[in-house]
Amino acid sequence: MGMSIGKLAEAAGVNIETIRYYQRRGLLDEPPKPLAGYRYYLPEQVKRLRFIKRAQALGFTLDEVGALLTLDAACACSETRALAVRKLAMIEKKMANLAAMQQVLGELVHQCDAGGGADCPIIDALNRE
Image 1 (cartoon, rainbow, N blue to C red):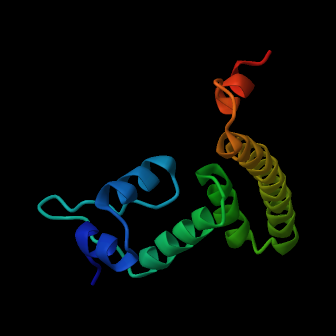
Image 2 (cartoon, one colour):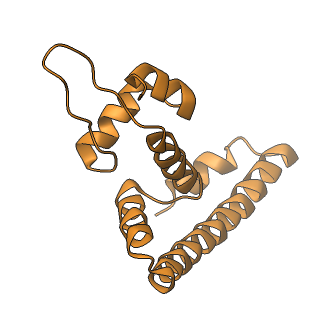
Image 3 (cartoon, rainbow, N blue to C red):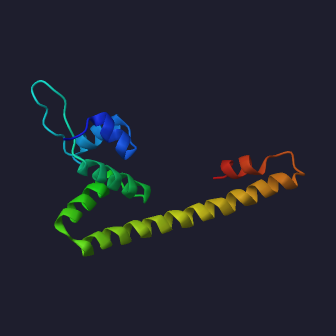
């Protein structure tokens, strides 16, 4: 016997609306609804929901999660690796950009702390063309 959407959501640690959204996106199958009853989900759906959430936590978009699910079904490890390598490169680039932003902002805050002028160094930097 399956579980209700509420029990599925609880077991997977997600919101019911998240499940419905994933169904609309084609990431999760929607079981048929009996004429006089509720849809019941199989326990395997909990595993799939957790897969989706873990992939998102690693930075994969829902489109990329869909590709991963397809690759999983096809047992395509080399393609999966290639997708992960591209994601890793994107994350590394974002980290480098964040480090540069941190550096510049830190210097501006330090200039503010040093004081001395009537003008704000942060505002001045943002106003530069």
